Amino acid sequence: MNTNKDLILLLKEGNEKAFSELYNRYWEIVYNISYRKLRDEDKAKDFVQEVFVGIWIKREQLNEEKEILPYLYTILKNGIIDQARKDVCRNNHIEDLQRSLSVYEESTHDQLAFKELKLQISAEVENLPQKMKEVYRLSREEGLTINEISERLSLSDQTVKNQITTALKRIRAAVYTLFF
Image (cartoon, rainbow, N blue to C red; front, side):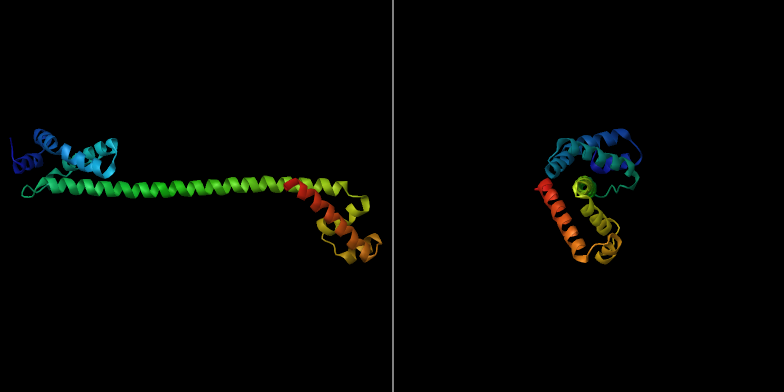
């Protein structure tokens, strides 16, 4: 059985048997630490794999004079922290998507409600008596003033006001029953 120093020296040379021995010595320790932090067997196994892949990739940089376990722990800790950051970013992104979908759904609902309201108002305008309908359209659809309407239709200002008021009352009553 080789010492850790011997294993690291062999590992630095690319010796796969030394890597296997190092793995067999420490995988369970790394797994237990990982599992305690994550509480997920599959993620813990993934982190064990990442730690040892990292060791293999950086094997030439290992210092045989230092203990390997703290180095393994540091790789594991950094991996878990990086994963937590990614999870937070992913969760924030998911929440943003959910909010935007919610806003989209609300705006779609609002659009449908507005369309329904417009249809209801149009139907009620069509049900108004002819003169009242004409006064209402000149006022609300063409934007004419009471004076302009009274001159155009040869009506008194008060008659135009009364026609608009009555038309609005009828439309409001119909819309009110639609939504309440």
